[in-house]
Image (cartoon, rainbow, N blue to C red; front, side, top):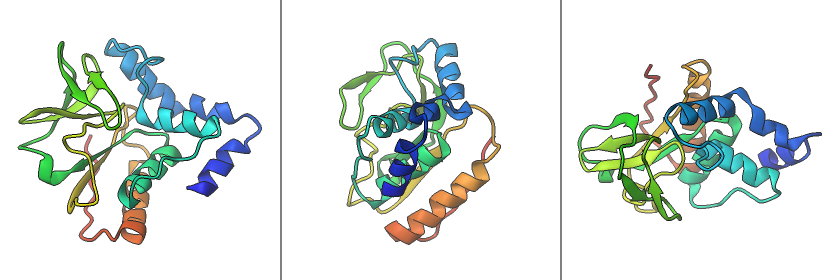
Length: 182
């Protein structure tokens, strides 16, 4: 994580990372859904902005740290969920009027127009911030990590493999399954 921070901060123009095609595609998706991408940022962009500003990665636990690292490297938002707190099937859709949840370490997030994941109990994750309800903690035994690409599947195999390898190496992950869904 420290190495990635330094690589970005030592670029001749560090803010250039915020203009990557992946970040731009997320911004365009938000705008198409009616969300202001300057007010609601994809999680990868938020992490990149933090690093460009000279702040370190937030250090939460090995699993979350790996996800944040891969998000910065890929420039893509990644949702991370404790499977024990997911109820039923998960769908990906736009947030509806009046939908909110408490984002991790945040306020109640206005989900209207945000691309989000919902289960039988309602929304629990978005490309901006995941919910406290399904967040990964030290007691989590099984996770679901979802790399969100509005630009299509190109490169996703690389990033799922990177995420899997780092989770096995640094978080003791076992029985890792990956799948690219179009």
